[in-house]
Image (tube, rainbow, N blue to C red):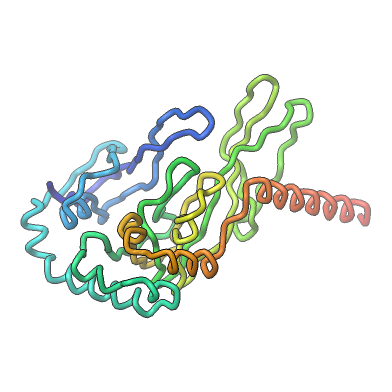
Length: 275
């Protein structure tokens, strides 16, 4: 294995996803790497298989560092960073109840990383829960959900684009099928601030729709989900269920968006009548 540093050009990072409607497997672009970025370090540091595909966006020059050299150069730095991440987790009110000390002897199941603005930290769907539990150390992240909205063609209309500060984000495509329009919608569900976690809620609940944790420029600590669950006893599970909250059902999300759209239309009509 090797680590690849981008000298010039850019590459797409794709991962396999499954369409919840058709069960069709497709490649989803989760990141765009530019000069100064790198990839492949996780496989080298934690001796795991790569779970993404990297595709050139055109002409690209790479600096390739052998895994052995990379590991020798960064071994001490990675160890210090791992210990700092473990210490941080032990100070979080919710996670501190979990046996954090086990990570000291299992460093392959934890890592800390800075995620650039608008890069995806983890993703999940009803058929695919996230592989990592994420704790935000610095900065913040947005929880973005994606769902399909159906409408009859004769009743279709175009909604105005809503700023990102508001919950609803505009659709990125439309499909016509049997005189019905299918729109892909994105909505900001919540933010994850320093000291808060994402993924604990999904230990016992499946997400209602596709969900992404998107960085706003954040340093995060990630713990492997299966290791976290393996070392969680029933009492802790009950605590997590009580304290970590839950994500709303899809029907609740769609209802909230419909109410928001009705309110926006009502305000627009009032303003029009006043003028």
